[in-house]
Amino acid sequence: MGMLTAVAASLRPLVDAVIGMPPPVRVEFWDGSSIDPSPETDSPGTLVVRSPSALRRIAWCPTELGIARAWVAGDLDVALDDGRDLIAMLEALTRPLGRRERSHRLDPKGVGRAVAAAVRAGALGRPPAPPAAEARLRGWRHSRRRDAEAIHHHYDTGNDFYRVVLGPSMTYSCARFVDLDLDDGGGGATLEEAQAAKHDLVARKLGLHERPRARLLDVGCGWGSMAIHAAKRYGTDVVGITISQEQVKLARERVDAAKVGDRVEVRLQDYRELGDERFDAICSIGMSEHVGSSRIDSYFAALRRALHPQGRLLNHAITSVGGSRIGRGSFIGRYVFPDGELIDVGELVLAMERAGLEVRDVESLREHYARTLQHWVGNLEAGWDAAVDAADLAKARVWRLYMAASAVGFADGGIAIHQVLGVAPTADGASGMPPTRRDWG
Image (cartoon, rainbow, N blue to C red):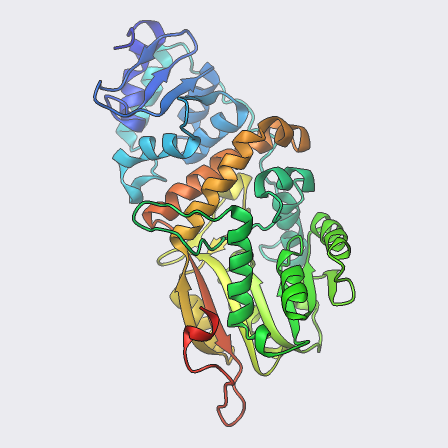
C-alpha cells in the first residue's frame, strides 16, 4: 500500500466521497504521497492530483464540472500503464458508481467531508478562474446567432486538429464496422473502411443507388465526406450545408481534390435559409443534436418541405432515453457541445411523423460508436503533440476526456445512436420504398 502520509492521509475522506475506498485506481498527490487500490484490483494506472487547485475547484463546484475544470487546467491528470488508455481509466473510476450516478453531485455530507479534507491538506482558498476553453454564448438559445457561436466553438477548433483525431476519412460521426463482434468489441475493419461502410449504408437507405443523378441535401455536411462518397459512388448531385466556416473551406478543397466539383456544392448556410429548393433525398448526420427539442418540429418540417414526393430523409443522431438537455452545469455543456441536446429516439420518430414523414426504419449503431470513439481516442493519444500544436493543450485535454467518457457511455448503454429513415409519400400513399431491408443491407 502507498504511504498514507501528509496529503494522502488528509484526503482519504475526499477520495472515499468521490470514488470510493479503497479506490479503484492508484491516487497520487502533489507531495508524492498516494493511496493504492486493493492488491487484487486491475488498475489501469494512476490518477494524479498535481496541485491543491484541483481540490479548490472540486470543493467550490462539487459536480462533474469541478472535476472537469481540474482536468482541463492540468491540475488533475493520469499516468497510464502500458497498453491502457483513458477509456480504461474512466471505466475503472466510474464502474463502482453505476451508470446512472456518473453525473452525481456530492450530497451535503460528502461536500462537508470534501471541504474538511481540503482544509486539512491546506488546499482550501478562493476558487481558481475557470479555464478559458469554456464556451460563453450570448443571446437566445437556438437563435441563429447563438447557434453559429455554438458551432464555431465546437467545429472551428482547427482542421489540422480534426485531421489528427478523425484520420484520413475526416468523418465526425459514428462509423459502421460490418464485422463487429458485439460480444468482444472486435472488428477488423480500419476506421476509414468503417466510415465508408456507414456512408454507403446511408446512401442505400436513401435509395441513391436506384436514382442516377438524384439530388441529395446533406445537412450539417462537415468536411464533405458523405457528399464526396455519394457523388463518386452513385453519381449523386449533392448540396452540403454547414455553418462552420472552417468546415466549408476544407470541404470545398476536398471536393476539388476528389474531382467531383461538378456534382457537389458546399455552402455556408443555415437550414432555415433553404427557401423553395427541392431534393430527392436528405441526410442529417450528427446535426439534430444541435437543433434541440424546442425546434425539432420546425427542423423536420423544413426538411419535409424540401423533399420531392417519395423523397427520403435519414436522421442519424445521438439519443438518450427520456432525452437529455446538455446544460451549462455539465462538462460537455461548458466545453464541448454548448446548447446541445440528446433527444429520445421515440420523440424523433414522433417529430418526423408530425412533419408528414412516414417512418420506415429505425436502427441502433450504439456499439459501433463505442468502437469509433476507441479509434479516435487512439488517434489523439498517438498524435498528441501534433494535436496540441494544431489547437492548444486545454482543447486537446477537453477532447481526450470528452471522447473517452463518450466511449464509456456508448459501451454501457448510457447513451445511444439511431438512424431513423422516413419517406414523403404521395397523396395516394405511394412510398416508392423497397419491400424489405435487404436492398440496403
